Image (cartoon, rainbow, N blue to C red; front, top):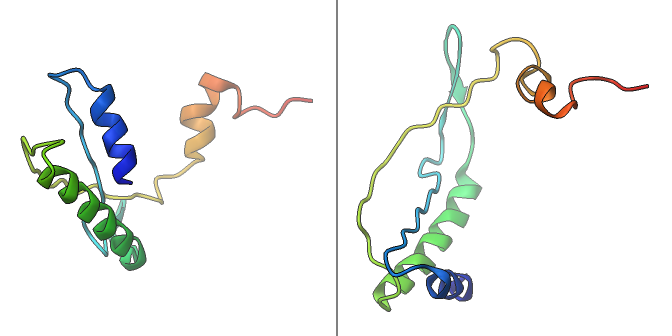
Length: 101
C-alpha cells in the first residue's frame, strides 16, 4: 500500500490533489422509499479500512502528502426503488439491458 502511495506521489503534478474516500461506518444505513430498512454489517470491511488509513497516516507522517480537508458524508444505500436499476439506467447506454438473439 505504501509503495502505491509513493508511486501516486511521484506521478502527481506539484499542485495535484489526491482524494481518499473510505466508508467510515461499520453499520451504514439502508433506506427504502418508506424509510429506513436497516443497516449493512460492514464491521469486517471497517477493519480493512482502518488498516488502509494507518498506511495513509504513515505517508502523511513521512511528508509525502498533507491533509487539506477532512469531511464525512453519509451515503445511503437504497434497494427497493423498483425496476432493474442496471437495465433501466445503464442498459440503454451500453446495450446490456437488451437481450440479443
